[in-house]
Length: 181
Image (cartoon, rainbow, N blue to C red; front, side, top):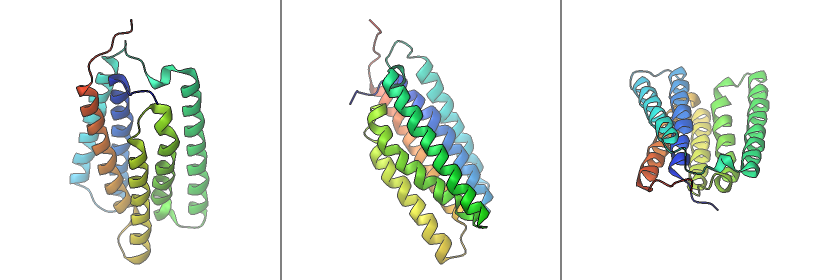
């Protein structure tokens, strides 16, 4: 497994920060707002810092510059989107829209496992487990209480991805800049 560069860490923060913001937004559909808006805004700020970090390290290698890794990444994400779409369509057709975030979180968690070696980021494995546990918590809460699954999953997944984005930036900041020579 290749070591993750500052460029990779920056783009990890960009993508996961963006998705953290989306999850906080989804949680707002569960009936809450206020601090969730602040979480969304902070996630976008972290994503922007990730973008700057990634762009300021152009000489560093990246997992996506490897043709094989890039192709594997595309296949994994393509399968993820297809599975998410199919499950969401089924849940929507069954009138169970509140459980779509549970399904999405579960599939996202599973997709982190094969992405770990592709992106050279072994910490994606514990993120996978945590994301699947978030999905399970949303399912159980939705079935056993009046609390909305989008609220549970949106808040937990937003916090999880935001935390991961911040730690990716911290890991990237500790790495010395690499030259392309």
